[in-house]
Image (cartoon, rainbow, N blue to C red; front, side):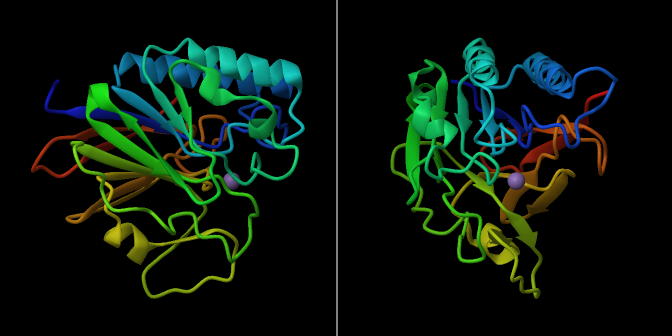
Length: 244
Ligand SMILES: [Mn+2]
């Protein structure tokens, strides 16, 4: 096992959405698929040990069966394990995609959709990852709330969360708040965050977290994903990559 853990992190793909994909003319749904496929190819080139997908793979729970099957198939073709959570657009409401389609049936995919949160262990990488399945995107929902202590017997502990960033000293009445103080107090070595479509690094001596931005939306620094290298005793090395 190598000393360094390399993570690829993306979120907010919004498959089957037509609101904000990188338009090249033509069909927005097709364009969104192409943009995600391109992002996956770029992430593969970094040879990550694991990919974290921090919510909103789909734009809505009424995505077409064809698109859902396409997404399951392309995730299953990746040469690395994928750990993912629902977002607000593909949340665990009644009739949710992830209630109708078992993403955990994909050999390399771990879907963390339990409302109270759940941990998956990838022993080959000596890692554990925690995340939860949002049911209601409300102010009472805490994406990082209830994260357990680092499990024994693993080198790395990763977390995923989908919600709005609230800086230190500010309060928010908006839905699914993720407070900086929660990030700073997290037991996780890296927190992969989603919901903001613009990338944002949140790295302090105590903490490594980021919003990856969206590979299908070009606000902020463009269409982006994140690659993070974790090494024992060293600060996380985090890079936002722009898809041209
Ligand atoms: Mn979202």
